Length: 181
Image (cartoon, rainbow, N blue to C red; front, side):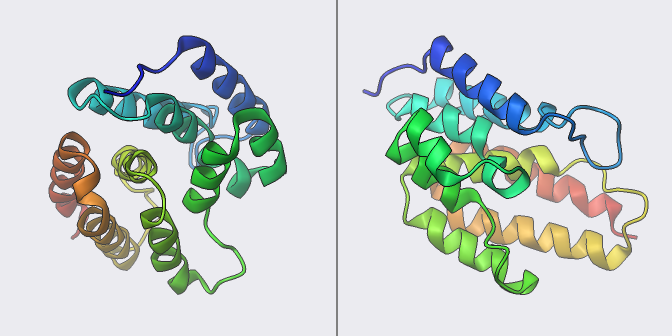
């Protein structure tokens, strides 16, 4: 059985993420961006509670830090120095490769995530669960459909990581259908 996640480790990763995302807001709102990784971590923690035996600190730290490389000036070496190699590799796998054409990024990211441990897969499932909220009002029907299709691709590729997260993601994907007009 894996070790339970540590509050101290959570707090350390939370502060690091909060500083990295300082001044950023959830797109389309004035809410602080740190809400997003916090909700992703909550999804992961809830799944870990139902599915013990994982490297819980790895999962929680990756959840809190998953957007730091992608959305801030924090680099991989800073994550490695603060949280270790496994977390750094997980966060890197969860980060889009901006050098690729947009239409290639998801498949590349999923390929890299699949090379990591199940805990990293769980973070990607939780990330999309959290992101499947009502779409921005300015999105077209085509953008909404594309986002839902991406969610289905994530589900199909990573569903074996966690029955709890897979069930929640599939329910969110099904509900997201209502936004297609």
